[in-house]
Every structure is written in C-alpha cells, then in structure tokens.
Figure (cartoon, rainbow, N blue to C red):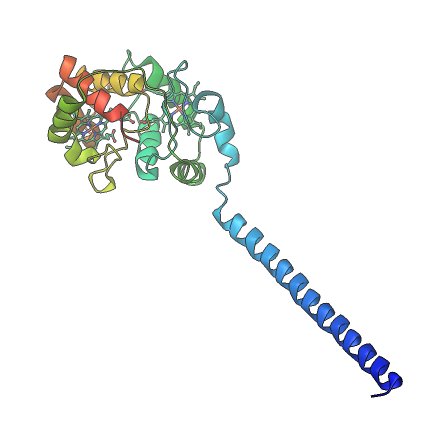
Length: 229
Ligand code: HEC
Ligand code: HEC
C-alpha cells in the first residue's frame, strides 16, 4: 500500500468516526429530550396539587394535613375522602358541631359553610386523602397486649385490624391521628355531644360503640392505635 492510499484510508475512517459520533449524539440528545418530556408529563400526573380552597385550612390543619395538637385540630392527611366529605357535610347540615358543649366542632361549622360542597369540598378531600399519613409523636402508654386484644374485639371489625379504616364500613382511619383528638371524640360520642341527630345513622352507630370501652381499657386501646402507622 502506498502512503497516499493509507492517508486516504485514515481520513475516511476518521470521517466515519465523526459521523458515527454525531449520529450517536443526536440519538442521545433526542433520547434525553424524550426522557425529560416523559418525566415532566408523569410528574404532572402524579403531583398532588393543593387546591386554592385548602389554603384557609392550613393555619389549623397544616400544609400537609398533619393537624395541630395545640389548636386541637385533627390530622386529615391519608383519611378517606368519603369520610372527610361526610364530616364536612355533617358540619353544615346540623349533624355535627351543633351541641352547645361542642365548642371545637362549632369552629368547623362556620368554616364548612363557606365551602362549595360540589366543587371545593371534593377537591380538598381528594387532595387530603392522597397525602401520606403524618408521623405523630404520641405521648401515651398502656398495656399493648390488652390494647390489641380489646381493639380487635371491639373496634377492629369496623376500623380495620391496623386501625387503617374500612371504607366498606364507612369507618375512618384512626391510626396517624392525635390520641387527644380520638379521646375527645370518644367522650363526645359517649356523652351525646356527637352522634345523636336522628339523621346521623353512622354517628349514632359509633355513639353506641363508644359505650363499650372506658377508663384503663380504652387507654390501652388508644395505646394500641398509637403504635399503628
Ligand atoms: C380555626 C381552626 C380551624 C380551621 C381554619 C379549619 N379547621 Fe377543620 N377542624 C378544626 C378543629 C378544632 C376540629 C376538631 C373538631 C372536634 O373536635 O370535633 C376540626 C375538624 C375537622 C374535620 C373533621 C375531621 C375528623 O376526623 O372527623 C374536617 C374534615 C375538617 N376539620 C376540615 C377542615 C377544612 C377542609 C378546613 C378548611 C376549609 C378546615 N377544617 C379549617 C379546626 C379548624
Ligand atoms: C359498628 C362499626 C364500628 C365499631 C365497632 C366502632 N366504630 Fe368507631 N366509627 C364507626 C363509624 C361508622 C364512624 C364514623 C362516624 C361518622 O361518620 O360520623 C366511627 C368514628 C369513630 C371515631 C371518630 C374519628 C374521627 O376522625 O373523628 C373514633 C375516635 C372511633 N370511631 C373510635 C372507635 C373505637 C375506639 C372503637 C372500639 C372501642 C370503635 N370506634 C368501634 C364505626 C364503628
């Protein structure tokens, strides 16, 4: 082979290399662009965007629906939308928060009445139901074995074995909730502050159930609930 031919061959193969490199890069650039497009698309699908109407709730229930113990506001994150819808409806139609001793429930009556039940309420509750349950530092103790036993026998059939709630029984999630709040609701149910209205079938059912447990047994039940995620 003469020199001229060799250099021509070299030139050809390096031109080829450049070509291959260029094509590969175009492919890579194209793939990166497609990837970016796809990821931003799936992000917009999975992002749980806070509805405007939830902003007025943040002061008490927190940005992530985690609740506020000092303000005695329950956690709402991870609760079933069905249950939350019903409570917001109950606050407006006199089924909850009307008893003269229900000072905290009354707060919610005024707030719920400002919401549009057909548009804003479903937006808010869909947003809340999709949020992860908050991690709460519980300050309760008790007998875990007894608590588990009492809980499974008296509450689990409706609220689920891990207190995760049971939509088919219309029963809310109790785990991931402030025990102070749960305790107050049990007192409200058992003393006729909540769950007495003749149209409040589910509240009346729970009012009856609230009479099955009190004192140390109920505290053990709360302790069991506090250990569930
Ligand atoms: C001023 C504080 C405050 C604001 C603002 C507020 N809440 Fe509440 N909310 C409470 C308190 C306190 C309770 C507990 C009432 C009780 O103890 O019965 C409550 C209870 C609830 C419950 C019942 C939860 C359950 O587990 O049964 C829902 C649902 C709720 N609030 C939704 C909302 C929404 C939605 C907003 C905004 C539109 C809102 N709240 C704004 C204080 C507030
Ligand atoms: C027969 C089914 C049933 C049983 C058994 C039952 N519950 Fe309930 N519970 C319900 C339903 C339904 C609701 C929702 C009521 C409503 O929509 O107002 C409820 C609501 C509650 C609430 C209010 C939650 C909130 O976010 O405000 C608490 C607390 C509660 N139950 C605790 C208990 C405990 C503790 C036991 C066992 C001692 C128990 N429940 C047994 C059906 C049941």
